Image (cartoon, rainbow, N blue to C red; front, side, top):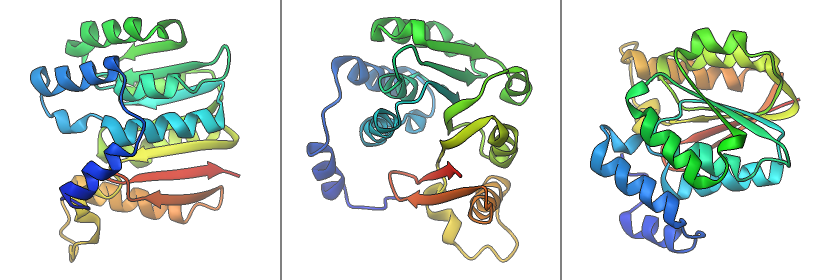
Amino acid sequence: MEFISEDLLHYCQEHTTAEDKLLQQISRDTHAKVMMPRMLSGHLQGKTLELFTKMQRPKTILEIGTYTGYSAICMARGLDNGGKIITIDKNDELEEMVRAYFKASGLDSQIQYLLGDAMKLIPAIDKMFDMVFIDADKRNYSNYYNMIIDKVNPGGLILADNVLWSGKVIQDHAGKADKSTQAILDFNKMIQNDDRVENVLFPIRDGIMMARKR
């Protein structure tokens, strides 16, 4: 679902700081070589994540869902001095490509790239986080949130991608939503009703939920 016209989207991109050569390369390679390239964060969302991070200046970030590394690099650019981002993905077929991008970014010493099931890896991470970005399998969004909320420092941000789910969240489901759509509906409702956070849903790309832990 296109939320704005192509002309408006192009105008927004023209008035957003341009991608550098590395991010352009990641975008090109992802569209040419990787299945489901629409999963890429891309220009507008990537710069949004980068600026959110630069405003927050976190020491620690957790990303659930690396894909081809675009968003991890954007967020790593906003880390505080000596900060680190841990990014998790289960697709080991992309490992060589992703590690090459991290090395090219010059930030690979600040990016810890873990391969495996996030549901199993997260409980073993003995860290508190200033920022979390959830962008993995939608059916586990609520599970991820419940696993990380106590690992987020007060004032920390939790961001979740695809929370508008191509507009399916406002369709009349009459109890018949598919499992992924229902998972997003449940997640959005859970955040809205969680008094541990204050939140806003941005209609950026496919929707970004931002929750700030009180």
